[in-house]
Structures are given as structure tokens and as C-alpha cells.
Amino acid sequence: MGININDYTFEEGVKQGMELIRSERVSQVVTINPEMYAQAEKDEKFRTILDESEMVIPDGVGIKIALKIKGYNVQRIPGIDFARRMLEECAKNNLSVAIVGAKEDVITKAVNNLTNEINGLNIVYYHNGYFNDDSVIYSELKNYNPKLVLVALGSPKQEYFIYNAKKILLPCLMVGIGGSLDVWSGEVKRAPQIYQKLGLEWLYRTICQPERFKRIFPALPLFLLKVVTYKSKG
Ligand code: UDP
Image (cartoon, rainbow, N blue to C red; front, side, top):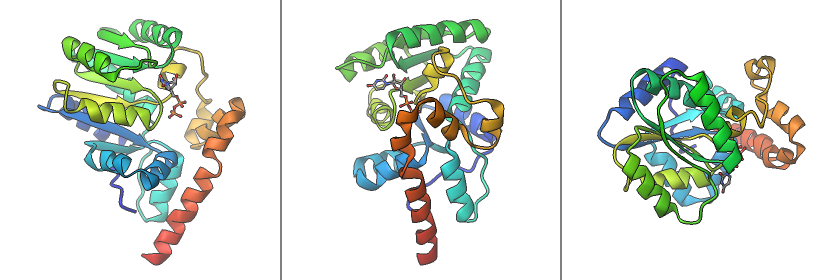
């Protein structure tokens, strides 16, 4: 359907992430879900961002099902788990980290929790996600020169923010992490394990925040319908 998705296992994804951190460029990780596919369909620039991203990993169960319909059996790599693991790897390897996004109290709590929970984690810079001038944040990031930058501005804002940063920042890995800070701050509960295992986190989040329903529905069924009809054409 015109979008390349990496079929790494979780461990391969982490390994690739670490290789990119050590490379001589700014790299972008997109954790793709059906809503992003819908965005790419109507927004040419967003499609370019996906094309040029160094890693596109299947975050949502919708993408996993779509790939299965196409005959590819891939492991889901939830963005929140991938980002958390990258934080742990950075802590182990003495690599500095920056985080941008979410409301001020949310990011402050998340940074505190992460620092307490991950031994050796070095967060050199963080900023809330409600700013008017991206260039101010870029120049602060450039000064601190972190090797991993997590960006939680929701999609597609975070993908644009990261894409535009590629021409400005010094080499680092940048990951769009959506609502992960809300979870790490303790403000939003992650779905219980059983939902995670069954790929039903979206259902749990919709039960807890019914206003999300209109985001997921009809996007998910429409997306799957498109996948199926695309298959019958191809
Ligand atoms: N957000 C932000 N700045 C904005 C809009 C959103 O920092 O201008 C934050 C918001 O506070 C939340 C996250 O981005 O922490 C978006 O979360 P959402 O659940 O929408 O992300 P998803 O994972 O569903 O893409």
C-alpha cells in the first residue's frame, strides 16, 4: 500500500535503534498505527516523512492485522515499550536523553519517575509540549546535544517536529511516543497485561476515555476494509 514497515522483532528493533544512535545522522522512528496511515493518505508531506524515516515500526494491532492479511507475520512493537527500553539502553551505555511533550505537570512527574526507576538515566533536558516556537526548542536541544530524544506531541505533530529537526540537530535518535508520558507520569493507567497480550489496548483506552472512540472508529474498520480490497486488486 506504498508504506514500508520494518519487520524487526522487538530485540532487533532495539539493536537497530542503538546502531542509529551511534550513527552520524539524526534518525527518526515512527511507531505507526492505522490513524497514521489515514493521515498519510490525505497528506503527501506526511507520506514523505514516513518514506524518509529510518525506522517505521508496527505499534498498533491494526497494523499487525493488516500485515497478516498481506501475508506478513510481524511482531507488534508497542512504541511505549520500545521507548522505555531505549531509555534503559541509554542509561546502561552512558548516553544522554531529552524529552519533549505533554503538559508541564505530566512531563515533570514522568521525568521524576523515570529517573527513579532507571538506574543511571541521564535526562539532560526536558520541555512540555505546549510551545509556539519550535526553533526555541531546537536550539535548546542542540545545546544539550542528547543522543536520544523522545517527542510526545501526538501524531502528526510529533512526526513533523522530528522531521524538521533532522536538518538542525546534531546526530541523535528521535522517537515519536504519543501518549507515553501520560502513562509514565502515572496520570493515565496502562491497559492490564491481558489486554496488552491480546492486542486490545485500544479497547481498554476507549473504555477509559470514551472520547477516543471517534478517533479509532471508523478509522480502524475502514483501514482494514482498505487493506482487504487492496489485496483483492493486487
Ligand atoms: N501534546 C502536546 N502538545 C500538543 C498536543 C498534544 O504535548 O500540542 C501531548 C498531550 O499532552 C499528550 C500527547 O501529546 O501527552 C498525545 O497523546 P495522545 O494520547 O493523543 O497520543 P497517541 O499515542 O494517541 O498518538
